[in-house]
Length: 122
Image 1: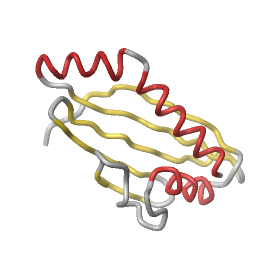
Image 2: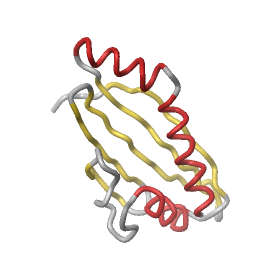
Image 3: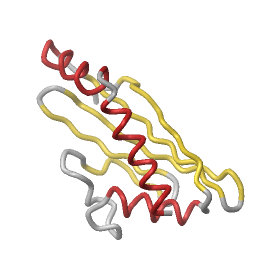
């Protein structure tokens, strides 16, 4: 299996317990919040350890990627949710695609928006 390169990590602390944040995470990410395998187009479920970790992965012509969410207790009613991105962008087309997605800041905007949506749903 090809090892993916670290791209970035974003985190947000949420005033809710881990179970509540987990439910919010599934509500935001999954088409069916009762089924973690119903991820957005372009992703498949890689691993799930409720209520602590949801790992999804995907691939297309220009990249292979993974997005991993981890939830850590920060107290009785506070949870830190982290989103880590790993990816490889092979070949010249991959290099251009990386510049468009990562270099433009678009990826950062999308991930931070997801974290805000999870916080709002919790």
